[in-house]
Image (cartoon, rainbow over all chains, first blue to last red; front, side):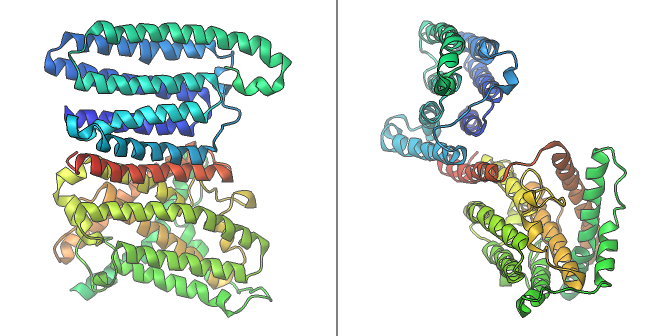
Length: 212
Length: 316
């Protein structure tokens, strides 16, 4: 499973870089959905090998909640022409942000080897830390609230990958609880963003960049 | 025997490179539901150009006229030092490695840019400026790829890399290798001037490499174009033989095996041409400033290959 962990991990890193490249929200949401399915498949295979029912349930929950429901809900919250919805102005130029995202992967590698590597000893352990940094950077580099929300969920994905692989015995109630919390956060954020879009943007044009 | 194979490889590349371009153009047109020109059209174009009179700008120096011949000769040297239809070094093989080959490609690029600046044409200058900007960012990708292959094979010799890829399934299926393949494919689209980077039309807004040879005519233009065809053929062959499908290339000296592989190599090239034509017909051209994002992603893949190597020690 070590090989599968590294492969899924680098797939996740690549997908985040792809998100960093994209401007249209639909593509970013679809990419997030794909990355969640990849984690779900990994957890399923890990659960099947370890014969761990908790991991199997977690895999199903990840697929349903992160792979399907959250992307579906975010798409519903876009205006009618959801495929036109896009980031109007990035904080960091896109080409620079791709290179910076890569830089954070390297930072994750260095941080892991300077701290946790000696106690865990897992060669690919730097991947979730790199994903965590990439998620933070995705939030920082974009103005659009939905992309920032996805950046937050990328950070959570990294924790799921790390936790699911290293601590399969973690009580299901904790991981399942996080997923359910997430539904609440996404739904409330969606409502707030919709309200903001309908009211604030009409008054002040400069707020356009903040609307969801 | 080696001398015979040298000649064979030279003839193979020089005379088949226009055919590959002809097939590519034909396929692209067919994908767009057009009839398209004959696959031999590049040969007709070269024949026509060789029979036309050359017109040289009044202000241009001798460099402008010499460069097409010099660059064409340098492409011929490259043909003899890269694994095209043999996986064993030919007579000139030992004179350069990957970095050396890259330097010759770089030198050709520099000479072409100097010549285009010498033409004093605004459009040529525009092309030089664009090609330099993109090249400054795409060259590090190629260097990173060579470094990664150096790490894998402990050498920078393209023949050794091919032999290792042919014989080691561990390296061929490794994540490091596939990241490199993806990065090189993206770089290949840049170097061969394909979409989404460059569109070859009469519109100067999208021109990059095409604008460099704008002031050339007659046999000089024919040599520039033919050199361009050879460049594409060589880069595609390197991609196929050292990266994507390194199999079946003869590792031992023998005329029969080389001749048979010549046909196989054309089939491999045709597959790649179909992929190129499909991309050409489905992807739209990026705005010039968006090209840098594409280059950044290609750089990321090349860098991730090295990171995967350090993370896994090359075991995955």
